[in-house]
Image (tube, rainbow, N blue to C red):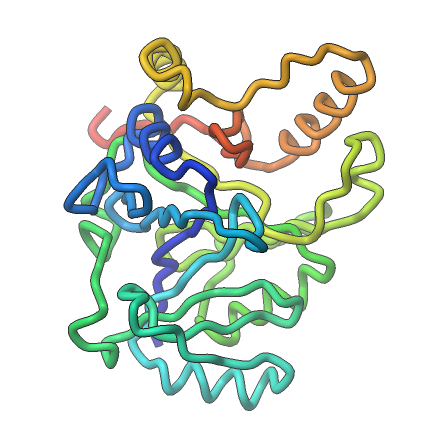
Length: 281
């Protein structure tokens, strides 16, 4: 069975600012007829970013992710037979990109899209094999979980994801659909001891590959100068307690193996950065 990690969804209070940030700074392309619409999608050519308008009672930030599969009946069978405590439900028909939703054994929710959706299934990616992608593109999606071996096995069992590399002493699992790395990180409450508010097991950050961190920073500065309302959120308070807490969270972020630099967007969603060598250079 073939499965592609096909989208990542963010729930945002100001999705216009978020889309502008990811277009201008990280080079994603709009797939919406109106690029400045409130909600909508951006893509790096393989995976799409969905920006959903946050409503009362909805959590903010990184919300869920989705797979496109070539045999949804087989996915349902595997979940039912191998993970009976996990369930599958239909998504409303107005959700044109997805037909069903499910979850892993720890409750992390994902969407499913498939050919049987017919005309209401719309593709936001530019290509299926990862060969036609934007210069700056998504490299990994990282999630913190209580039981990495069990959760990694779930995605291997259900979606035939492969190990991109062997798991080391850090207990991190590096799965792949052939293009994107799905990084399963351990979650321990003690990791957040010095960081103030304790974050729950959930999606942690999105990792980008860029042609040059210096060029990315240049574009970031230009974006902030032109659109200060769509700049990365900045806490102007300088109490030592808050400075220490932010430093501790940044230090935890830097433990990602792919980390060379990181920042956050206008609504405090973390993203990781690393340079790659463009083909032919």
